[in-house]
Amino acid sequence: MAEKKVSSLPAKLINGGVAGLVGVTCVFPIDLAKTRLQNQQGVPVYKGMMDCLAKTVRSEGYFGCYRGAAVNLTLVTPEKAIKLAANDVFRQKLSKDGHLPLWGEVLAGCGAGTCQVVVTTPMEMLKIQLQDAGRLAAQRPGPSAAQAAQTLAAPPPPPRASATSITVELLKTRGLAGLYRGAAATLMRDVPFSMIYFPLFANLNALGRERVGDGQVRAPFWQSFMSGCGAGSVAAVAVTPLDVIKTRLQTLQKGDGEETYRGIVDCTRRIMTREGPSAFLKGAACRALVIAPLFGIAQGVYFLGVGETLLGLLG
Image (cartoon, rainbow, N blue to C red; front, side, top):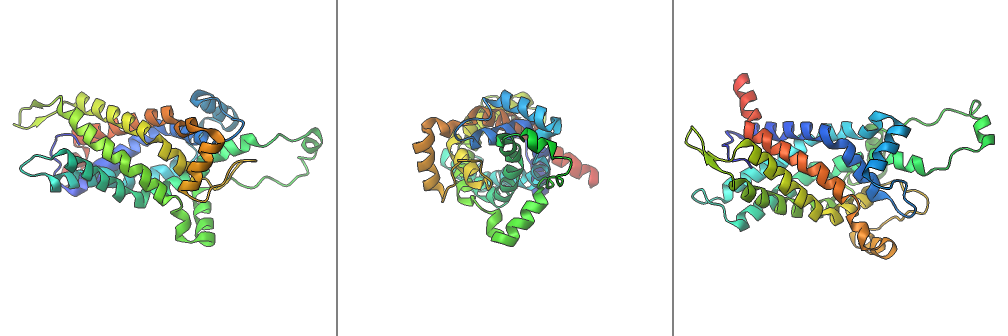
């Protein structure tokens, strides 16, 4: 994290939550494109990120790019707060005389990634269903002339699924485990991500440290922001194959001729056999474009001490 001292756990949670809300609002359309590109099998609906966003706007309107954003914005605050605060707490606990060895940095990242899964899994489970609905609709053939002539007498189409309706249906049919489908794959993605991201950020951020007026030594704002962006993009691309597997496992509705999977090993084998190694890098550029500003913003919020300022005003 930024070298600025964080005064309390509530301040850490506020900083993480604000960072998550701001970051997700900025990059959510790119995340939607990432999900749709990763779920493509066989004949692609989209040629790339820009093609996906353009077709989404044409068929679903501008706000179609934000399908699933509500559930993400609701749950990203606890998710990002847990991730960033847990890493900060683990780093403090593992430090000795103000020094944290590399193994401690990796272990702190591992702990942060593990803690966040309790919120990340249901959040992404719901978000993916909503994000991918437009891709599935685009795959369906249009109505014939005879069908089009009968549309006036036809009953109205069923309402779009919402996060609430999906949650209720999953709880009724599969219990709490339904919301945690793909939890192992989520853990398999998030733990390596945090083990790469947090040590890399800490070392990049340390390169620009300077002494400030209050006697502390810390990196300037631009250094913390750029370090967050750089470390985030590297970690995001590195774990993209794991993210592809997680996305495929958590997608409940499949298009015509698309594979269903029984678990991580079965998913990996089928993707490799049917689509080849390159399929594991689907959405890599989108992930880098999502994660880089997301964590750059997060480190900027920590640096500015938004949580401490709010608590000071309330106190």
